[in-house]
Length: 321
Ligand code: GFB
Image 1 (cartoon, rainbow, N blue to C red):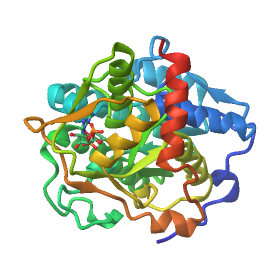
Image 2: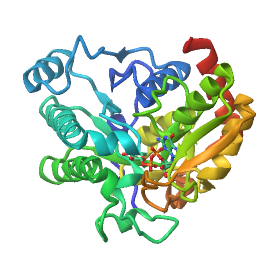
Image 3: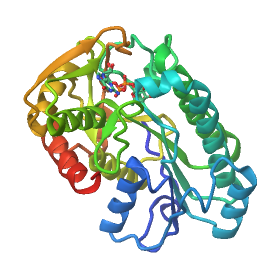
Image 4: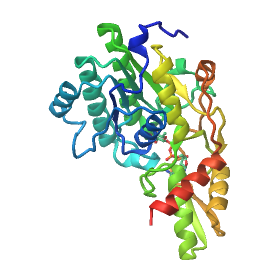
């Protein structure tokens, strides 16, 4: 794997660099913003959705021509759990294609020095050999439940590669595993599994309900990375990685969903039973990432699922009254 020796001044952010975090109010964007601020980057451009609709090409073009950011973290996306992906497939493919096309193209037109595009581990084939290596991309059929989202994210990766090849841009792509943490979406119908279970167990405990029904069989395995770890990986990659391949970000460890449920049930303090609704699909049986490349570059996660779930529940109790 190659780290290009692009000119020093083009590669490194300095503390005064003009940095645009697209999607700074979301789970990932808010964590990247906190990480940048903690590392002393003071010149951040942050736009709420109502100030800048990233699906509006003209608005995005005007924004980039006016602000001329030097570095862009493209964390804005339409995201959701397995049920949301099945319920809103058109929204997932349309909104993600529009956001990434506008931001990537206008980053090129306004000569952004470097852009980090955030994809997802669901871009890999449903039955890819595990742990999943970056080169398994497009070697097999995708998981049906989130194919529209995966195709949109694959398009983003190919856009970055194509602009780099045709225009000499420096747009890198990172593929995070399942992410969770503070500032997440906790709606039980559209959320990912960890926030959904925190809410389900918490509400059941508060209401004195005796059992909680979860989705599927509980047998799939998933890898989970706490969002603050993802944010540190993104800032790290923006600084040191100029390779053209997408690079995995994860922990390299996975857990069965039923074990995860027991972990969250214990953390929340729910004493009732867990039931499984097998009429709801499991999704892909396993998606654990091979993270040897990013480890070789010198980054490793710090926060364990136990610690991350505790932090997330504490945040939930303080903020989701
Ligand atoms: O997090 P999740 O919705 O997404 O589901 P995926 C993970 C596993 O938890 C699945 C099971 O096997 C679910 O069936 N599960 C059990 C539950 N109970 C629940 C519940 O109450 N809520 C939820 N949400 N899951 C997503 C993709 O797949 O991975 C997204 O759909 C994205 O597009 C994300 O790529 C990273 O891991 O199955």
